[in-house]
Amino acid sequence: MSIAPEDLEHVRATRSAFAEHRDRTGALFYDLLFAENPELKSMFPSDLADQGRKLGATIAVAIDLANDWERLSPILENLARRHLGYGVEAKHYDAVGAALLATLSQAGATPEQSGAWARVYSKISGHMIGAAYPDLR
Image 1 (cartoon, rainbow, N blue to C red):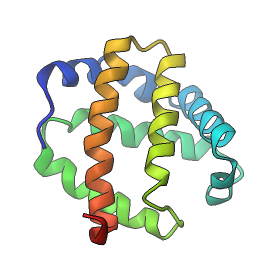
Image 2: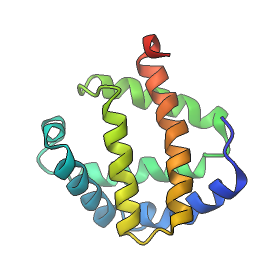
Image 3: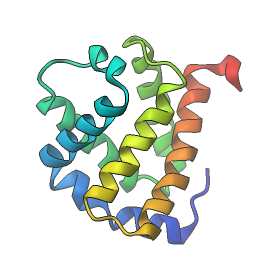
């Protein structure tokens, strides 16, 4: 997977929202996700604080390794396969992407940063869906 240098720059500019403000950003993400997709709430623990920190850490790793696909790819594939056990379906990746972009917008991301994230998330989620659901390829 290749990410355009300008997309990588825009995505990296949003890193602090996830790495330094994990609790606040994680809570906002899950609020937005469940507001639009209440049926997904049953897949998550009732206390989302730890889940939000995990989300922030995972996104920070993805940002850090976005230009090193050889290292990022197996992490994404493992994550996608683990999510199968939680009942995640391929269609849920769109809901997560929408919540991610809405979170970024509320956290002050510029239109350029949001556009870059949309492109990067599309590549990442497509790879994860391919790993978890090889019959959909």
